[in-house]
Structures are given as structure tokens and as C-alpha cells.
Image 1 (cartoon, rainbow, N blue to C red):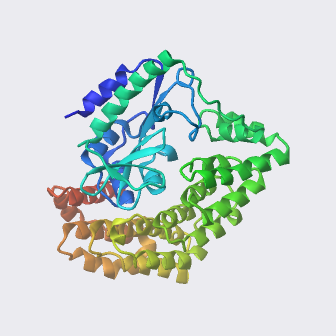
Image 2 (image 1 turned 90 degrees about the horizontal axis):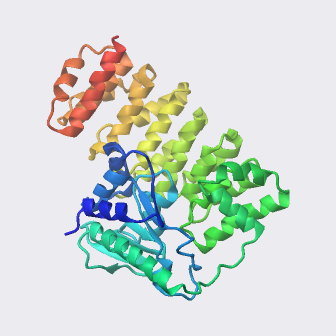
Image 3 (image 1 turned 30 degrees about the vertical axis):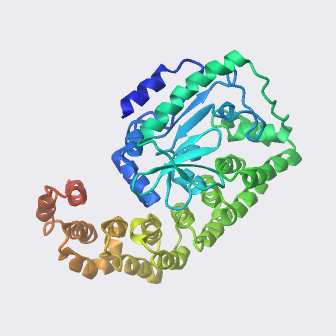
Length: 446
């Protein structure tokens, strides 16, 4: 059986005709990988988790000088389209993010783990069984028992095919010449060139900029996996038409979540962002709701309370909501809104959080407790609910309740000893939340 070390050794053995790109300088922390699993709503296969723990997310790509790119649908042997691959994992870059690529590529029930430049994907089901599929096709089971085996074979094939390509010196179908607008879009979508390309494009005529903005939608219509193009559009928000386009894509189309993030990442006035984000809370996709709620936290205002509470009620009607991230993000945003609210709006925030302290699933309560902790004395109305939660049989809920009560009342004395004891629990979830309470008590009492 192929091991991870063998795969990494084969990557190291590639010559300079291949480039290796990793999503980050350091491997992701365990908490980031756990968050990835929660967003996927599925456990990672052991081999996929091991890859992410070592690499985060990565890609191996052949140099265009030695492996000229045929057009995706040109008449050429399949192997000539297989000049690289990606390992999806923890990444801020959409093409390498396992959650975004699973949503964009994977049939229901499967997790996308590996992507090949020819357009095929390899992933797995809840039992870890591996499948491969191309866009629009039904997945087919594959014999490989591990993602390591698949990667090892891909790497071996890459090296062999590069040699064959050099020996054949074939006539590769040339790419169609790009228009100036296509070239601009390629530049602003490239992480290596966008910093200088965007200011240069803004010097172009309004007609050229408008054509580039329109091309984003056309390209996404052709290939809805190119969600990184939405962030290219987000870099052009000095042009009001780009803002309008982002607002449109946030409400319609396959890249709604990416459009929300691109819109929310720009330093735009609330009037350009908040109405669109509030409208996105009504979306059927929990990922869209999560992204909208998260970005609304940057514009926290008391007027957001009712829409956020309504969105929470919608999410909680869905099966298995306790394992998602949309509800937790809404709690966090409510806390940010509550920090600026008073009167009826504040009361609604605190009441909503206080009603969500004892669900069946632990994770579903974590952000509700943490939001009350963040509100501190402003969450005084939640004290009766928290005093009840302290009596919970599960030390996880009890420890969180003690932390919240102490943060609200300012009195740590009745709780700190119980938190210290819980911090020694063999249950890692209990010890983690209790330890945070102990550390917070030290900071408050300095």
C-alpha cells in the first residue's frame, strides 16, 4: 500500500519542468481542519485528512514551455490534457478549497478530494470508497483503496507523459487568440499578477472595463467551477458596474457564495453591501446563508436583528442543522449586532441566544455560548437560562455556561474551581472549553 511519505517523495523527485504550489507556508492547525469537516458536513477520509495535515492544499503543474496546453475540448489524446492536478483542502483560494470544490464539482453525498487538469475529479463517500467523475457525468467507483495510490499513479504518469510529449514533438492544437478583454480577465484573475493588473485596467476606457466585467458572467456560464473569477470581479469595485455585477451574482447563479465573499471583502459603503447580504439570508443554500451572515458581521447594525433571527429559524428547520456552520455564524453575527444594540433589539438578540443553549449536538450550542460570553454584561437577561445550563449533565454545556455566567456577572469565584476540574477531563471537547474559561478568568483577574 502506498504511503503519504512515498507520495511526498515522488513530488520531491519531479524535475524543474514541474511546479509545486501549496496553499500556505505552514500546515493548517487541527482546529482549521475540524472546521473544514463541519463545513463539509462529513468526516474527511483518513488519507485526505493526512494530506491536508501535511500540505493544507496544493497543486502540481507542468511548465507550459515543455507541456503546451491544448484547449480543454480540442481534438487531442486525453493524456495531453493531464498536465497537472490539485489536492483540495484548507485554503483561502477557491480553486484549492475543499468545501468550494465539493459544492462546485461533487455529486450529492461525495467529497471532492483531487482534481485533474483534464476536468476529472476523484472523491469519496461517507464510507471512504473512492469514485471518479467528470462534470455532468455519473461517478464511477475506482479500484484504488487510498488517495495515496491515486496520487502516486498520477505523479508517475505525469513524469512518463512529459517524456513521451518531448519524444513526439506533436503539433498541439493552438489556442484561439484571446481578445484584449480576455487577456485582461486572465491577468486580474491570476494571483501573481492582479496587484498590478487591476490599477492598469482601471486606466482603460469604460468600454473595456465594462466588457471585462461582462466576461466574468459569460465565463461562469460556460464553466461554473471557475469561481475564482468572482474575486477578480471583486478587485474592480472602483468601477460601479463591478459592484452591480457582484450584487447580481450574489443573488443568482452557481457562484453566489463567492460573489458574497468578494463583495464583502471590499471596503464598500454599507448601502452597496448590506441590502444584498440581507436578501441572501433567504437563500436555500446554507453555504450562501453562512457567507452572508459572516459578512454582515462587518457591518453590524441593530436593524439586522430581525432578518438574522428569521434566517436562523429557517436553518434550524433543516435536517442535521446542528452539524452545519450557518447557525453558528448567525449567533456570532447577532453578538456583534447586539454589542451595538439596545432596547428591543438587544433583548431579541439575548433571548435568541439563550434559547439555543441545550441542543442535541454539542457543536450547535458552542457559538451561542461564545456569543453570550462576547456580549458580557449586556447579556444579563440570559442569566436564568445559563444558571439552568450549569446544571446540565454534560460537562461541556455546564462549563460553557459557567464561563458565560462569569463573563456576564463579573464574578468568577463560584465557577473557576469547577472549570479547573473540567479542564482535566479526558473528554477533549470538555477540557478545551473549560480551559478557555480558566484562561479567561486569569486575564480578568489580573
